[in-house]
Structures are given as C-alpha cells and as structure tokens.
Image (cartoon, rainbow, N blue to C red):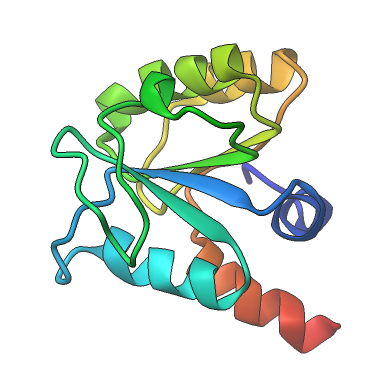
Length: 138
C-alpha cells in the first residue's frame, strides 16, 4: 500500500488547490483528460504539463514543471513508470507539497525519495476514484 486514507485525505483537502497534471493533453480519450475534469469539478486549478503545452480545460499548458511561473501545490503524474521518478524529483525541487502517481505508475525508489524529502505521496491510485470515496465517508 502506497498511501493510507489519511494521506489521501490530506492531499485532496489540505495540500492546496493548484495541481499540475503531468501528461495532460487535449486528447479527450486519455485518462488524464477525464481525471483533470474531476479535479476541476472538485475545485482544483488544473495546470496541464505536456511537451505540447496545450491549453486544456481552459487552463494554459506548460512544457515542463520548471516552466510554470507560479507555485504548484500537488503534482499528479500520468507518465510511464520509467519516467515518473524524474518527475517526482522535479516536483521536490519545485517545492510542491505532494506528489500523486496515477494507477499503474509505480516507482518505489521515487516514492522513498519523495517521502524522505518530507512530501506527502500517493502511488498507484487515482484521485477521480478517491474523491467520491472520500466524500462518501464525510
């Protein structure tokens, strides 16, 4: 288990409202697009991060985390597991509060590094699943 319910609750409710979604593009058939919509409906500002730097869900996109000119609270990662560790390291360097690896995105060494840096982290989970689960217990 890569996150307990308290960590999930803390990230979703207390870590801030600006979420960079790495791997988010305008492709509506991709999971990142739908999850970003759920995050917006939950009151989060979604910042698309993708090499194309597309505007998605009405939000300006950026090619990398380093290109975002304002603070980000949480980084939600929709890239292959072999790339996810580098994204987590960039997130730590950027000073975010938490990192979230989506379903199927697993890098145990990155998880350990991120937690050792003092950040909350969730791995192999989806906020679009956790938000309704959290709300059903409220």
